[in-house]
Length: 117
Image 1: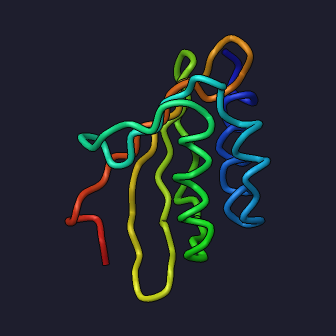
Image 2 (image 1 turned 135 degrees about the horizontal axis):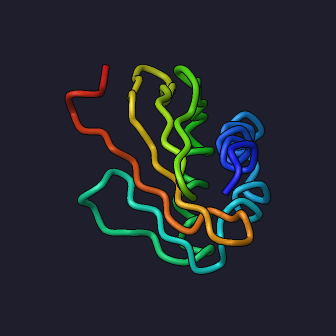
């Protein structure tokens, strides 16, 4: 997969948080996608479960700030960013795996209590 397609997925993801827009999320993820945030917790499977997950973040006013340039390889992109909300910051690394249609098929968020401040 080409780098611009992978980088666009990250840009679109950050835009969804800037606008608190579930339609952007719905268009970004594949219908049968999975979200595991953080890794080791139960997955959110399918677009409706994913939209419910992100709605709670949007309702809390969460915003994202990218840290550096995304790393692209194959059909995956990894990126570091800060999750900013009132009174808290989390610094995860997310990995998106895109399908042949350029939709996010799998999202895994790597973070723990050590990454919270």
